[in-house]
Length: 309
Image (cartoon, rainbow, N blue to C red; front, side, top):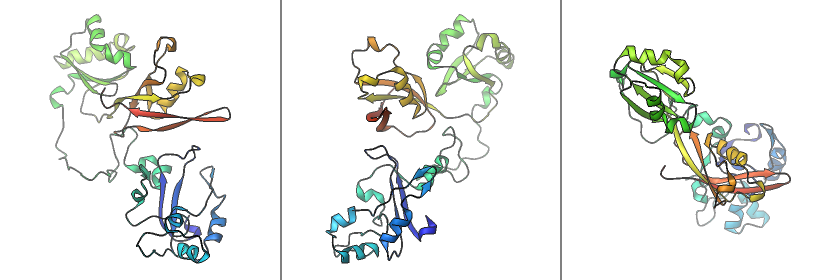
């Protein structure tokens, strides 16, 4: 956008519009001919998508600007007598930012094209230097090292699925494994501690036993682990003519890795609200619409994460 003029602000909404298109606002400084600017930007390709641009109308409507003189004031970025912000070029924002328009979940263009720039690593646990964008940062001494008493006396692993995680203590007892305790680490990860190093290493070597239970298993030696969680989402209003477990799975996969979906639709009494379990890699709680495109039609379902699991 820099080649079209001096960019003042730009925002891309996290949610989509009624037609499931992504939309945003960009504001330019000192625009004298807003019609020419609009024509230049219209049809520009960005990331395989073609832009459809128009001058933001909310400022015009809010201030009753429908005369050419008002449009000139709109393009020059002036303020009305009441001090309300007036648009500048293509898109406009008051000084306090997009929240003034009642918009939630607004992200910058960089956040959209590069999700990791928002401060979330691949698993939501390890961030690059300066990647934390919360209001508070707590400095931890480099000497801090948790779980040192369990070094090489415990194994840390990720179970193959949710069912295995739920019954894992029973599986260890069936396998006659002599362990001390099982501790949950979030997501599908658990820590199993033993009486000594020899017992932990012996269990690790017995892959014939634990192979069906874990997708990955290692001795605990203080390594950095991914922080994940299992989130239960309620999907509201899935149309019955496209009601299928695979559709529910795809909706869940749009938020992470789906771990559980309803398999037997015929046994469910309530088909309006359905639950799916998702392995999430960050702490963002879900509460939004998801658009489903089927043939030549588009449907919206409401997805909300449950407060308690």
